[in-house]
Amino acid sequence: MIAQLQDIIPALIGFFLGLIVLVYFMHKENPLRIIVSVCFMLKEKPFGIIISSISFILLPFIFEIISVNVNNINSFLETYKNILNFPLFPALGTGLGIIIGNTVINYVTDRKEKTEFAVLFIKAIESHLNVFSKINLSIVEISNRIFIEGREYIEIYTEGRKNFEIYKSNLIEDKRYGIAFNKIGIFNDSEIDLVSFYDLHLKESVSMGNIFCSVKKIEDPNLTWSFKSIQILTPIAKTLGYLCIYHLSLKYSQQYSAKYREEFLKECGDILILFWNPDLFPKYEFDGIIFPNIKIEFHILQRITSDNLIEALNYIRERYREIDKAQDTNDRKPNYLFRILINNYICFTGMQKDGTQKPKITIISSQETFAHRTYRIPDISLFAHSKKMLKSYIKEELKKKLEGICEIKYLWLGSTFKQNILEKDIDGLEENLDEDIDKFIEDCECESYIISPWGKDIDSVKMKFSEI
Image 1: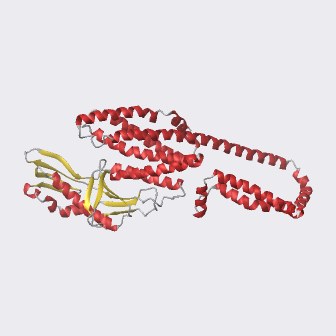
Image 2: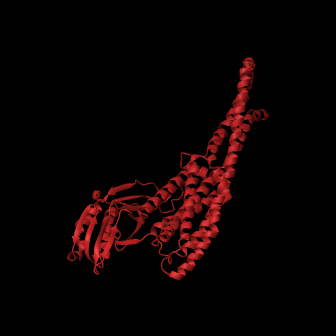
Image 3: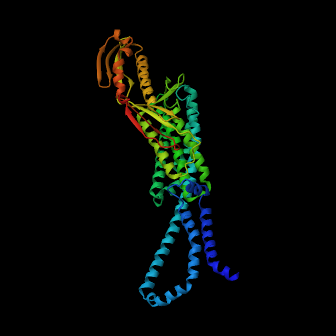
C-alpha cells in the first residue's frame, strides 16, 4: 500500500502545486469575468487563468514522468556533464538568468508604478465628478428662468457664478490629477487616449464655465451659448470620467470596479436624455404615421453641436465595448439616433408693412440638423416619414416668418433664386413653393446609428432623400 502511494506522490505534488497556482490567479482575477470569458468564448480571456489552468493539468504528468525516468535523467547528465561544464554554457546560463531576473524586476516595478498612478488618477477624477455634480446642479436650477425673469434671474445667476468660482479651483488646481497626468506616458496607448479625451472635455467644461460667469448682460448671446455648452459638456465629461476610473480600476485596482461600472452606465442613461431636452434643443412634433395618434419628436441642433455629441457618444460606446468584455447589459434598451442633415438653406429679404426693409430672414440652413432618438432600429418607414416632417416644418416656418411682410425682395431656396415676389403672391406662398421645397428636401440627407454603449451594432445607413 505504501509502495503504491509512493508511486503517485510525484503526481500528487504536481497536482497540489498546480492547484495553488490556479487558486492564486482565480483570487487575483474577477471570478465573474472568468466565468463569462469561458462560457461565451470571448477572444480575450484572463492570461493568468489560461497559464494556471494549463499548469494545473500538466504538472502532475510532468512530475510523474520525472520520477519514473529519474535514473535515465541521471545517466544523461553523467554522459553529458563534460559538455555542460564547457565555459560557454555557464556563461549563457548566467546571462539568461540575468535577463530573466531583470525582466521580472522591471515588470514588477512597472506594474507597481502604474498601479500607484492609476489609484492617484482614480481619486483625482472621483473628486472632479463630485465637483461636476455640485456645479451642474447649481446651474440647472436656473435653466428654466435664465432668460425670462429679469431681476430674479440676476440674483440666481449671481449665486450660480459664486458657486462655480468656489469649486472651479478643485477642477483646475487638483495636485493629484496634475501629478498623475504628468506621468501619463507610463500607461499604454489605449489608456492614454481615454484619459486625454476626458482631460479635453474637462478643460472645455471649465472654459465654458468661465465664459458663463464673465457675461454681465442678459441679452449677450454668449450667455446662451456658454450655458448650453455647459449643459452638454458637463454630462459628457462626467461619463468619460466614470469610464476612465472604471477602466483603470479594472486593470490596476479592482476593489470598486463593479461600483464604477454601475455609475458609468447610469451616467450614460443621463447623457442620452440630452437629445430629448427642449431647454437645450427646440422641439418639433409631427403626427405619427408609423404609430397613429402618436407624435414623433424631432429636436433641432446646431450641426457642430450634433457632430460633437455623436463623436463623443460613439467614442464612449467603442471604448466601453473594448473595456467591458462581459457586455451583460441586455436588460437595457439600446438607443438609436436618426438624424437629418440639411445641405443648403432657405432665406429671404422683404419689406414690412411700415415700409422698412427686413434684413435677411433664415427659414432653415445647413447649420441645423434634426435628431430623433428611438429604441427601435430606424427603418425605411421612418426615413420616408421624416421627409414629410421636414416639408411640414419648412412650410410652418415660412408662414410664421412671413407675418408682417408685405413684399419679398429676394428669396433663396438653395441654388434656386426668386426675385420681387409681390404682395399678392405672399398669401399661400408656402403652397406656391411646394415643388421648390420638394427639390430642396431631395438634396438633404438622413442617417442612423446606435448611440448607447449597450446593444448590438447596426449597419450605419446614410442616404439622400432623393434615394428613398
